[in-house]
Image 1 (cartoon, rainbow, N blue to C red):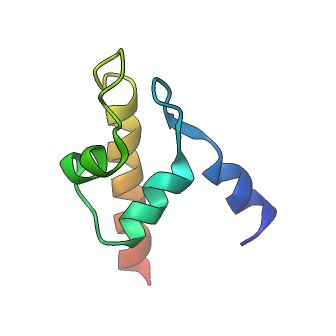
Image 2 (cartoon, rainbow, N blue to C red):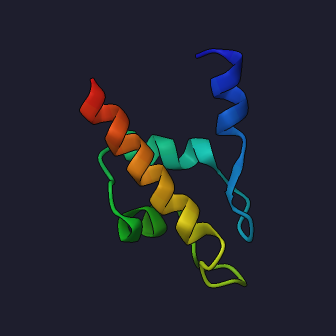
Length: 72
């Protein structure tokens, strides 16, 4: 893992709960590929905004990850 990947992993996805990108990536790698599944596994979407801020970020992350896996 290079420095860029480490820094990317530290970016917050769910601001209310303080859940970092690396947590979502770990669950995606473990086979959880749905918004509902990631929310259940991480607690994202249960903060004060009700998922309004993190849902688009999670969906983008799912899409990016799926595109990376298709390319390999």
